Image 1 (tube, rainbow, N blue to C red):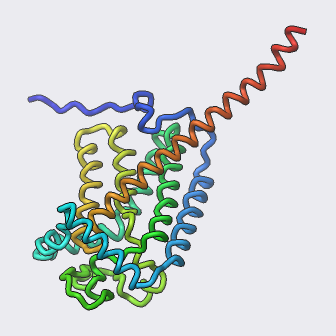
Image 2: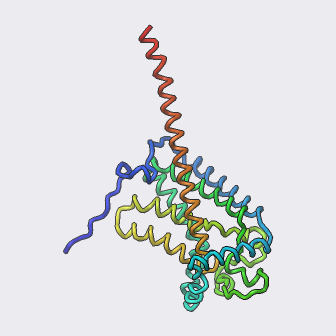
Image 3: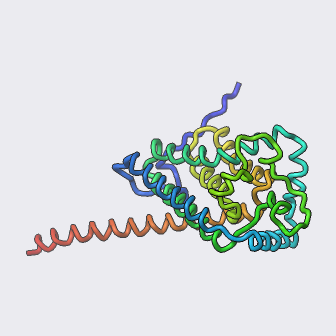
Length: 280
């Protein structure tokens, strides 16, 4: 009987494109927790105070749908129509949409902090950068999600279902409390997709088994599927999530390069006085 050999991934084996950088010392968990918490609170606050009008958000949704039709990718309604025939799938998707992106992202940060501290700062910075970049999309392109088209549109019947309303869950965007604290038109880009791609990129090269790698990819794929069948996003929102992820990684990489250059210049300045003293 042939036993499957586990992957043995070590931090020194990781290529530079996966964020392996110079050693990070003196990481304090309380400081990292404070940084992440402050940025997340800032994100939530700015996202929720930059709400647009339903008219503008609906007009942008129509434009995006027309673009998807021209590209031949407007399949969101067909996918939801098939999925809503299976109530357990929708209920699981509702809870997955509401919780998984937070749980898995926090797990990714903790995993890096505990197991790969040399890579932690890079991927933390990438996550913070892409999250803040999403605010730009929310402000510049407020977008009505599919689930609201029939509720807050211009009267045209689109046929999308708000699965949180129709199927039993503990929460709903349509509750008065959620409407007051949540920006209903913050759909482009999909931060669920951006964070899931971040998590996949964090876990995939570092986990030890094929099953773990499969789950890391499956998580990102299933997240994209869930945002569609629950009526919360369009396909192009997922593309937007990929874009802000790549930009966030780029920003983090530039930050590491600048930090490395600063360290090198600091070492040069320390060496020069010693050389001058020897010459004297």
